[in-house]
Image (cartoon, rainbow, N blue to C red):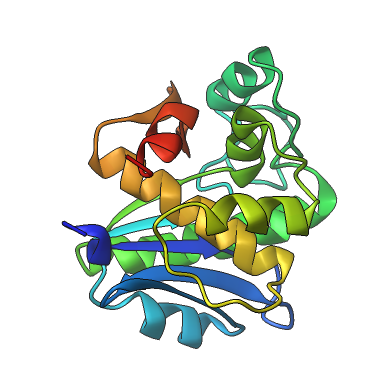
Length: 199
């Protein structure tokens, strides 16, 4: 598939002790798995020009740091909320660790020349009418797409990484949904784009 091999989807964990799911196109199928450490994430990301990360990549305007007092939501978060999508604010306890890790890794990736965008699988599942935590339902939907997935059990991290990857594919096609504000943006796969992959 044209340019699909340029995209890497990452469902980043807040800690190196937890699974970070990944998805990328290789040959004629989608490769899906997990890594753990920052070093593994950075090594995996080498060679990809578009990297989609399920993690906040910015902090709300009015804050100098996550520890600083200030707004809890960014403009892109408010736009996401307005559309009815539920999410955890970047300032929530566990999200702070994830945000710090994501911003650090994204900085390294950008320095190597990659475009890096924040994405949110939860919004994509909402748009597709899928229960965010129903792994069998999500997998059954993915199996209908031309991804040539291996028939096996997948973790939630892996399935979310596929949603990240799909956001990148839709972005390449100019058919993603972008929630953008002065302090960040979130790129998600649209229903029309994802369902159109079957055509």
